[in-house]
Image 1 (cartoon, rainbow, N blue to C red):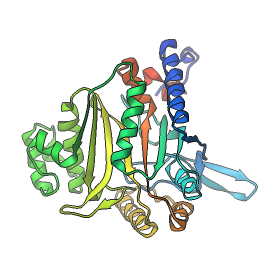
Image 2 (cartoon, rainbow, N blue to C red):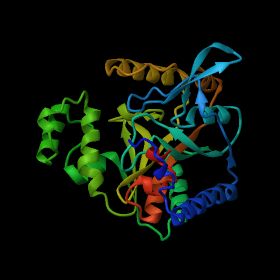
Image 3 (cartoon, one colour):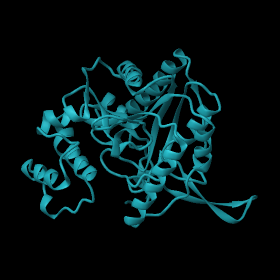
Image 4 (cartoon, rainbow, N blue to C red):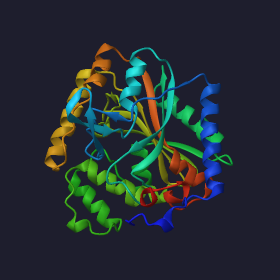
Length: 328
């Protein structure tokens, strides 16, 4: 990382891309205002943090009234928990555009501070929410895009000829080796989901066709905050959206069971302990909101910066940011 010398004061994004960002954000707001969805703001700092083992929070320290000895606050990685508290309080359909923060994320498609669009629709499942996401993204793209929707199972059948719900980790390792994934023999991945993620990122994502691709009904072990639908096998009612092979959005038919959500959080903490990661405090206010009652709803988070990359033809996320990490 640079030392922030005076020669690097200028923005990285060109005026054309900064203008494109402004138009895109205006387009997002026009879409939701036209649909009667209320814009909200929630805190960027919280006394609790996400437990997902794959996501690490940035923290700061507050000293002042109510915290004589100081108190750790976590910068949010998503506004999901407070937005669901608003939903439980009767807000109706809501959306938010905000800056979010994730430690350790920097690269071609990642900056530790980025812009997220998140919205929730009461009375929707993940399939109806896909309609909403497709309508919004198509309205923001410079030209209509081809759209496909495919289940997680069908996707693995198509690209790798396997059933992702039945193969054990060792068999998935062999598939990865046969597909030419580098360094497979030396990898020590902890579980089958890690192997499935490896196959997704190395073998399937690069082969996705141009346009919008919705992948839905993930393994139940990858449910996160989504409902699990019983069946053989059970599946998590969630989807991910890819645009021209780039992951853009992650949506859930939201879990409403507070006890089940607490169990998943505690399972996350066990996994974080095994990985030697910090153990953040649970968001008890969010769990209390679930206990009070959350209406049937679906929600989605969409990366504005990545969408802007596709809209403007940028090859690196830095090109659509005024001041990425190295110039912040």
